[in-house]
Every structure is written in structure tokens, then in C-alpha cells.
Length: 152
Image 1: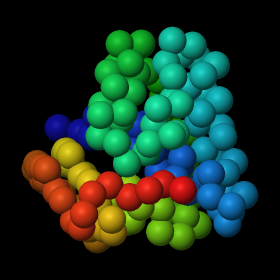
Image 2 (image 1 turned 60 degrees about the vertical axis):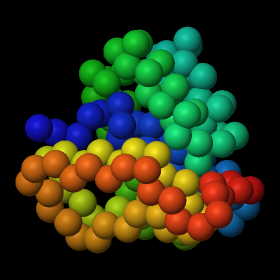
Image 3 (image 1 turned 180 degrees about the vertical axis):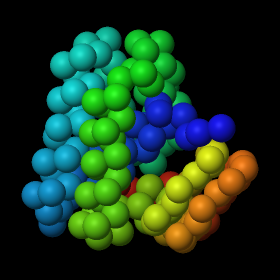
Image 4 (image 1 turned 90 degrees about the vertical axis):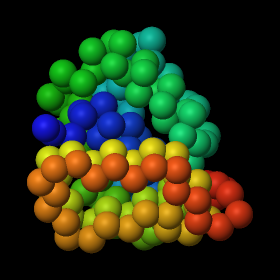
């Protein structure tokens, strides 16, 4: 079992929105996020990433985006998946805490399957380090703090 490509794409869009739209974001993060967003908007005109950009911490916005991307067949788009992975790599290397704002901090994971559900966090809600997952990790409904972070 492998990680769902749409999950990777949505995660990259959410993390890229948090990190790439910060004033202190590096050019690497901004460029990677911009390239991913352009691919989505150019190839999938019916898909709107605006909700996730405005509220990257919202599980509902991410789920809606995932549903739209799936309906459009974006999970089979190798270029889009590569762009999403580039965003994740840029955020991991240069993002300066973006994953904490979203509530998930994965680091260097090589998964056979990971499913993280409804995370609302004012800090790091889920933290996984240097994990090689051979089987399923299913983390659900994590709450750390008083509620979802303000992405501004």
C-alpha cells in the first residue's frame, strides 16, 4: 500500500500556503509552492485552492480540495505529484516551522501508508521523525491546545 498521491498534493498545498505566503519564506519555498499552484490551476481549472490557502489548518478545506482533485483525476498526474514533493522538500529544508502551524511535523518519512485525520493544533499536534513505515499508521482527531492556529 502506498501513500495516496492526492493526500501528498493537498498536504503540499497546505504546507506551501503556510510557509510560502509568510514574509520570511525563502525563495525556494515560494518558487516550489508557486509552481505547484500553477500546475493545479493550469491543468485543473475546476479546482480552487483558495480555501486551503486562506485556511490551511482546516481539515474541511483540505478534504474538499482532495475530493475535487480526485474527481479531476489529479492523483494520476506524475508532474503534479513531483511538484508537490518539491514543495514538501523545500518546506522541510527552508520552511521554518510551517508544519507546526498546520499541526503536523513529519520530517523524513518513507511510508507504505500514513493516514492523519482531523488535526487542530496551536503547536505541533503530530510529530513523526525519521520513520520508515511498513504498514499503516492511522492517527485520528488529534487536538493539541485550544484550537486551530491562525495561519497569519
